[in-house]
Image 1 (spheres, rainbow, N blue to C red):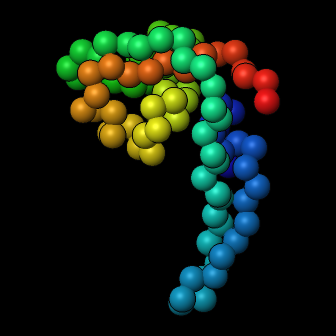
Image 2: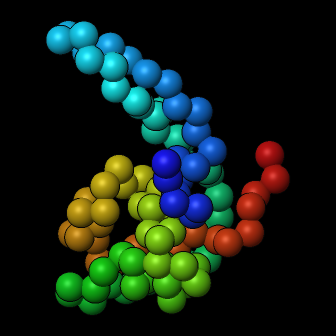
Image 3: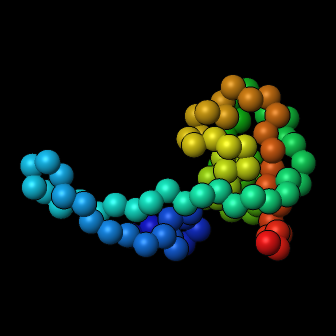
Length: 94
């Protein structure tokens, strides 16, 4: 079960059998949506992604959208970036 704004909420889950025979529930990693950037945020030392997401996207749990916009698999990968791309809240038509 995933929280409502999770990137996994609409992903289909399935099970896999481990070498020891145990079944585990798994979910595929979703592909990041290609979208426009609102602009860039100059990150200050120690500034957390959830606070940046809360400021720009009005929801701290959408920090993963900031990761996706910057091609970062994990939030810690952005710790070394001075400029962080902020994703648009408007979806892009395909």
